[in-house]
Amino acid sequence: VQLQASGGGLVQAGESLKLTCKAVGINFRLYDLGWYRQAPGKERELVATITSSGTKDYADSVKGRFTISRDNVRRTVFLQMNSLKPDDTAVYYCKILNFWGKGTLVTVSS
Image 1: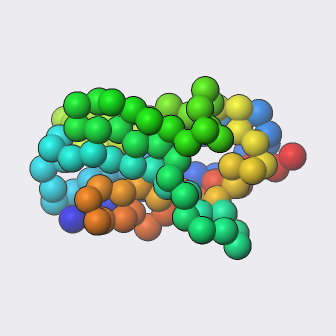
Image 2 (image 1 turned 90 degrees about the vertical axis):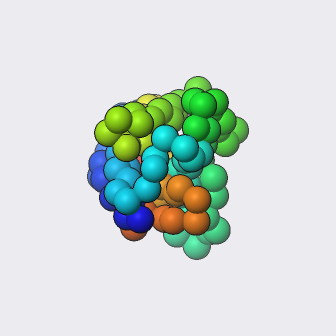
């Protein structure tokens, strides 16, 4: 199984980014998916999840700003991030079962 995350970058506070994670080698539609992040000096934390049936859940810190979605045909999970804040700066990882993507860096400047 391989997870290929992309879409990170450097943006200013208030701007948006969309992260993409494509899965290879797994029957994607059967599994729940998640986005996590790890800020410098902090532990990895859950950002958002989407179940195989499409139920979504979010960390309180991103509710109303981030949206997780999935495309089972393209085996891809997305994270739309709006109204970004400097506190959102982190490496973002996608996860399916016990498999992790390599991470994509998001940096939000004030």
